[in-house]
Image (cartoon, rainbow, N blue to C red; front, side, top):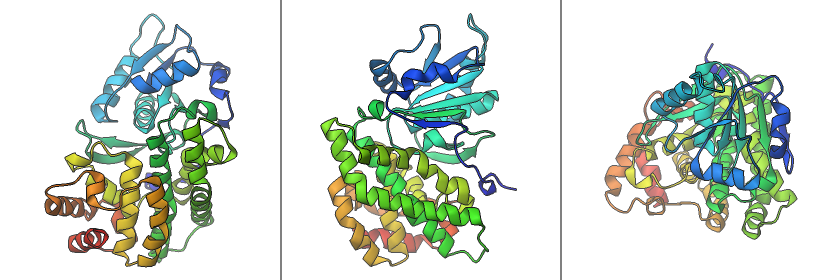
Length: 357
């Protein structure tokens, strides 16, 4: 049994409510030594919104969710100090911080609480971590023994999110439908009820984003809460995780993320947010399958959100031919998720990229 074949329904406890993170201590009954794992900007955003107890140890992490960072944080949190060894980690931040906190908690075999400060990915709700090296190159996905003990989504805290991270979250989450649909359509397997439930969730997710995504972005720009903003926040952070959680290998990743992973090896794209690269990957995936009409249907949505539609939008201005080869070479590796939707050659991936150009 592979980890991606196990149904994981989501966080052990989940609350989405304005002001909920101010009630964090109420979820810590039974724990004695919480340790916070956060980033510099995320810590600033959180402590501007509400205070943390002064006696809690805070570990601030910058960089990628790399094996070195995970080992270092686990060591620091697990070492006995005046407060004692950590018995729960509290991840406060974006996807990288939360993936790092989850992986460190798994290493220590303790619970983890996740509090997203930006709606960039579903990292707060998924029992896995995407692992990169110290330079930001994709390595693998690690599956953890347990889901988050608690996930708290506070729309008022998230209202201060940088707008580009909100857009990135929309791009990353939009891929749930396109990837799950492609995998399911190209399999000859008999699909379980859980796989079918995951696929139906992906349709629901797509419709929420296409119908309310622009209103959510407008809410962030105005600094005003709205039902559309809350719906989109929950879609990105929590509903998105149910697609892979229920459907397993049929709902986790396919062509769009394989292209993203290939892009992670292109230095010029390291400044581009995860979801922006995944959004571009959706277009490449559709081009691979010659689904031109669907590309044309979503291009207006992409243009309104400023999503990349060609290599130059990703910062690849020079050596584009080499970039195409590098992206294709990685995406077509046997262990990559592109193979879940069929057999494609490097030449076909390059041709798909060129068709978008």
